[in-house]
Length: 148
Image 1 (cartoon, helix red, strand yellow):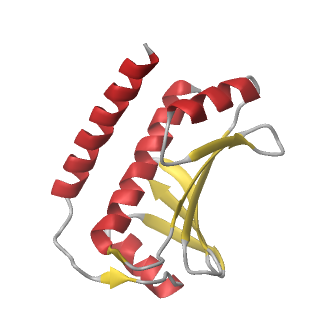
Image 2 (tube, rainbow, N blue to C red):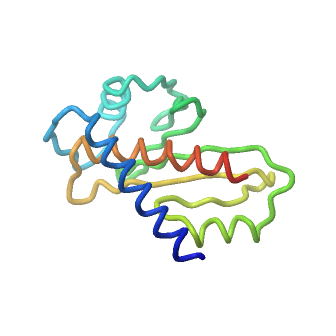
């Protein structure tokens, strides 16, 4: 049963990435690091609402979810979103993480669900890869919202 679910997740993820890829404007610009100027340019280009909180930290609205985008000291991108929860257990979180990829889910110090992804810019990444990562994060948020 678990292998059937994993196969279905792979198929759905692949199909979703194909849809996301088909919606991306062709752009071969390569980013080797991320800074505030580039992040703002990318978010504006994708019509993602954002607000600068402090240096290298932004509040973003992604597919109806309020999340945070943070630029690491190395110029990588961390995306994080929190969901309030008083009933989810660590065992449920561990099971979810064992069955899903491309992000991590954990309980924060308040017992809320935290969802996080990171995107390394080491070696360079095309704009379309960054956009696919943002779309994947939005899909993960939808999945977590439905499962918890």
